[in-house]
Image (cartoon, rainbow, N blue to C red; front, side, top):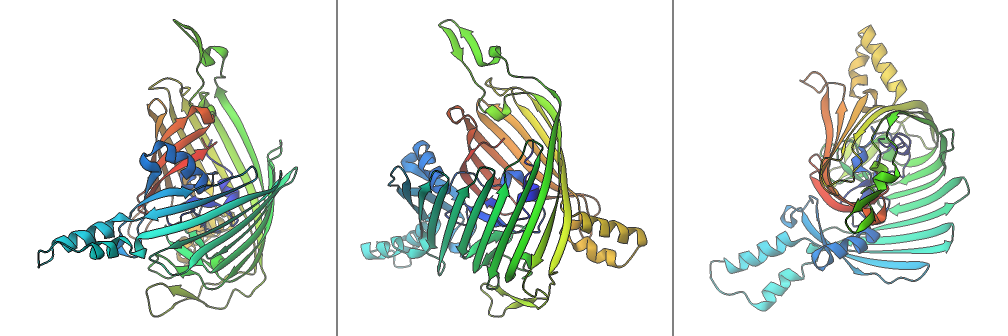
Length: 473
């Protein structure tokens, strides 16, 4: 089924979205925004771990990615590689390097096509090769403190930008809960419009329960933002209120249930096939896609949030590249409570074992991000109130439908398209519209049971990258 837990995770500060903007390969989803696409969720594996495995299948261990930068001459295309990876039984370290070739090639070409028509000197070429804006480097290390605890430290610097990104994460596993402490200076967030925001300091402590047999799950957490959010690529200067300075305590619960309408169970005949040389084991390319079925599932939950710092004062939003700061007069309530929910239908044809024509899957999920915002919009609409114009501008007030389509191309190769359809109208247009879209090609790895190499592209963010994802349908 589509990932229902996105509904709850996106309310907190630890939902990672895949992004090539950082060497870590992810950014945080902005809390309080519409739920992100399932296809946008970051891999469970750390980026350095991904590069270590992906490098075995790419020439010289170099993996391409695509992301625009504020410096247009650098281009969007980049190459990444894991340069160093020492490890012991309970510790490992990785050193990532990234190179953007466009500016180098353009500079060298300009040297050869100057008016003097002279062959450029070696020192002139070397000057372009060692231009620090072409390179980015990142260092990441993880130490296993105990069988249930680990600590991860990372830092990265981009040649075309000032400063570094630093991050710390402490994870501890209890019998029925997970505790996570995260701190970043700065932390990169991405909103539902595809805009990136840097928060100078972001610290969060979160405790989440494991899903019980009944489907009940709950989470509590404390989060602190320091410093004014800085727009990385936004042009309107309207920072999300959840990123403004303050201390926030949040609690949420959810109840999840799934019911099969029908399911064709895997049999021994599916796993073992007979050929001339005897019997051979033939598992599905992905264990999570091995059984044709139709199912409905749903999640319902609620959350409450308390801010311990006055959020009514106007907060300055720093616009990078602008001399003047834009001002945002958004108001943030010191206490709020709300409900959310999702309803999903999934259908799968095929067992994903044959070379072709053995997998077609569709998922449709209706998301209600904020029950109170939706109710307010409906009431104002029935009354014909002028306040309906303001409620219509609230992105949380509109229901959304997430559609996922997957089709086997050949063998373990699958095409996938994720789309999010908003059921409200755009200015000047009437009716539903596609709000976001991501398409990808994946290559499933049988040895990992439910692992795959995914190459995705987001037309909205104009970004794409190659990832290794584990245990995702």
